[in-house]
Length: 213
Image (cartoon, rainbow, N blue to C red; front, side, top):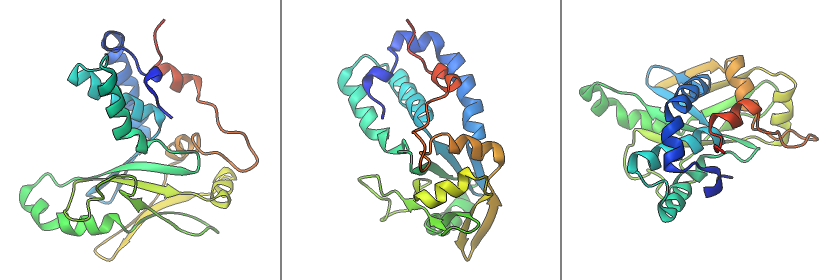
């Protein structure tokens, strides 16, 4: 869980911002998957969420405002997985205005048909925007927040090296792909596996947004 003590002051973050951004770009790239031509999922973890909060506070110049810090943490804390789930920000990519007007309603329907799958395990369909006060049910949106709740059997099968796939069953946006090994290895780091202690943050990850001094 992220709290104010985990965040850098505005001055400290300003000094190290470029270095953090370069490292986070590589981290995010490893955890980002395209699903077909128009959907892109960016899997979140504490590191990506903490960096996003720091960026918002830096842009607003409010990192030293306690109330602003609490507000941003409350706004984005729902994106941090709890050890039994994967969470992702899903972006609908339609740069052409005419195509956007035509396809946005369809793609908003498709978001509710996204799943992860593992041989021998029940398919896990994503919960969409359930952690938000407003669930985007009344209007199309270009951004959605997905949660894949993984039961102990699913997590144990992942730990045994099973090949995981992600897909969409919507009849007009039917796509499926294997999750690359490097991405899966990154996603596995935040899962609590049955019979094993909770994973410790890696030294490399901790160093990305460490508190100077």
